[in-house]
Amino acid sequence: MTDIAVFHSVLGAGDGIHDAAERLHPHGHQVLIVDQYEGRTFEDYAEASAFAEQIGWPILMDRALAAVQALPDGFVCLGFSNGAGMAEYVATKRTVAGVVLCSGALPLEMIGVQAWPAGVAVQIHQTRGDPFRKEGWPESVVESVRAAGGSAELFEYPGSGHLFPDPSRTDEYDPDSAEVFWRRVQAFCATRSPE
Image 1: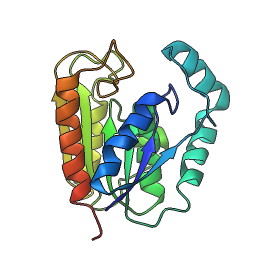
Image 2 (image 1 turned 30 degrees about the vertical axis):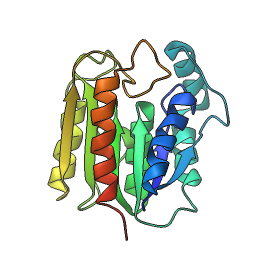
Image 3 (image 1 turned 90 degrees about the vertical axis):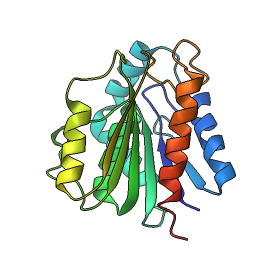
Image 4 (image 1 turned 180 degrees about the horizontal axis):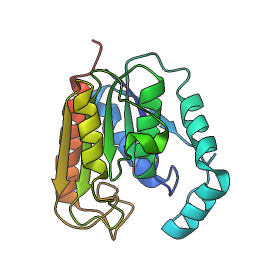
């Protein structure tokens, strides 16, 4: 059993995030959904991005860190899209067992961090044609993780869906890729269980 903190995309903690939690629960994991929007959710990326920018990234990062305060050391961070950056940030402030980044990855300097925590493993998952993918950013994270002695895996999936594992995003969801994604995530989390 692993404690897992799930960080939502810019769209908020909607159905797709709750689906993610439901996929993790049957494996015995304790899942904390980090809701930085206090219940607000969006369907449109532009509207959601404007809302997030209105709050401000420093406040969102503070909310992410505050939300995991009660979790014991050794939890796993799982972040989707903008939540990937939040997962990275939390991993540099707390002692975590591993980090999974889906559809997002920020070079460390963008979150004000000099170095990745020693030995912390990372998985990064993205579609090849993701319209929000930034050239070189996932590779930068991989380089930082490996430089700190952690294992880093970058998985690429066919298609162009951004939130490809999210069944509530019918125009982005890829069931075949989602199945592979969740199999990899489950294996990653299982190897980081303290038991």
